[in-house]
Image 1 (cartoon, rainbow, N blue to C red):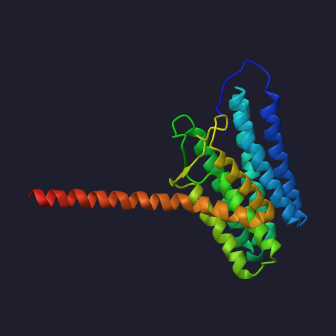
Image 2 (image 1 turned 90 degrees about the vertical axis):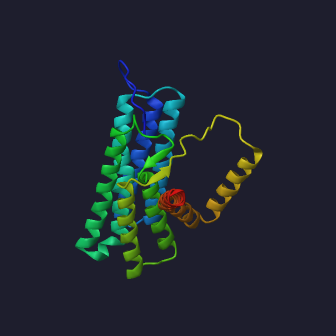
Image 3 (image 1 turned 45 degrees about the horizontal axis):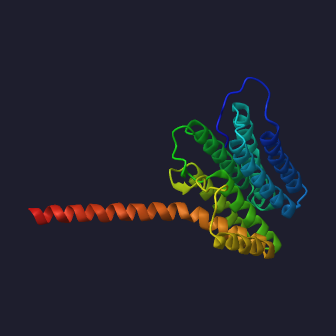
Length: 253
């Protein structure tokens, strides 16, 4: 998301051009879903995700943030990460569940809208290191990569449909929850890094190229699970500290 900054007139071309590219990719994904071209629909969502990630960073690096860009980016995110993945999931599998299927798709879409609205209202006060709730790009990536994986392997059983619906509901709940996720916003792309980091990135690109659906699904699944895991570890640590404090008080009596 872009940090609002008022300007006198006009809009900056490059960041808004990338936002438009993200919106175009989302619209193409919806058209492909209606035509049952699911692999193309998934790839379009990931292209939209890349374009959405670049527009904000380029705007910050070039000091071209505007209030218009922030609003345009948020509306584009709603289509790219809310409507397009929901339509993809419904067209591919959830329609087999009848009314329950489109209601599940709506729950996911509504959660994205709520997540974006909360993010926009808390952008000035939130901790930049963490997201409050699962970010909608990660939720869309998990659902899209799951569709890609199942479509490539021709997994279309009733059990797969139930799993897809469960993923949609769980990600919707995580988006509107208070579970914290690392935002990666503190990563400095302009600074120097050890040579090993470049090698790791190369290996990651090669792995994605070999089997993109599997690697992307595993990667985003681990990220989605990292929030609840971190929350459980923090609760365990707090309970341990309380037991230690209670034990110390009993020993002092």
